Image (cartoon, one colour):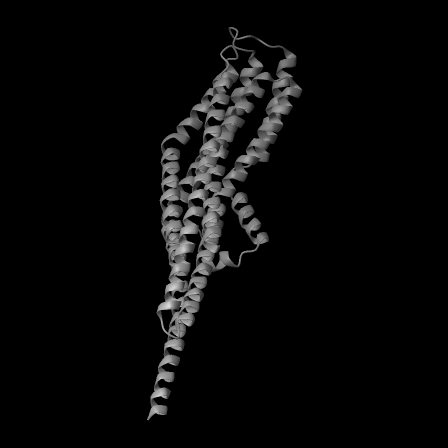
Length: 364
């Protein structure tokens, strides 16, 4: 009878040890499938034409090809624009060599012709680049607003509740603020900069390039300093929260190990295994989110860089041909493009770095 009772106890203990592990294994797969489905639904809602599985298996070469494909399908053609600008300068130089006529001290006729011709060619593509920048920020903001709760949930499920809360509140608030500012102010500011560029290049007596440069410096320095302080704040808060979460996790494992008789150590190890599986899910979700945002942000950034490269070559050519009007026009256009570029870069860097910080904190 005594041996029979001992056998029953051993069987019960074996069930306690083995059954939870099997349940956790099934639960891990179902949770991973649920997160994958949520990500696929988000990607489908924003018509990003990819899936989380495709992004997980994406190599660096595949990522570069995906970005290059998005850049190539754009209607803008920076290098054709460069050829047109150089042609206008040559024609303007020929006109200048024939003779110039002054317009009431506002500059010579060749300068007026070259500037107006260039504006006619550049403006459609320039404003298209501005619109793509604003659209990229809006699409990224919409994606981030629904991605952050999913990623924060995965981080919280892995035992990092405080870190996830800091990330959720801070990054979501910053993202919404940037989207609202871009929607309300970016296009008017860029349009004003473009108009001031044209005015200052035609009427040289009233040079507006200083105002455009001031706008560029104020916006770029403000965003740079603000993003640096914000990322530093999130880093410190997540680091502190990570220590708190780590202490809580160790305390929970200690309590489980000490309070459950005989099998407490096994239960504690099972908890650690489940937490590690959620860390893996959290890492996958965070990686997918960062890559998606980069796929949205990088194409317009590259387009703007190409346009700025065209403006730099144009400025050098204008100096070569002595076209002062064109030099001022293209320099001011470059400043407007720099504003759009700084907004996109700061927004993308803010999200990727903050997400990486939480991934690193949660992985510690």
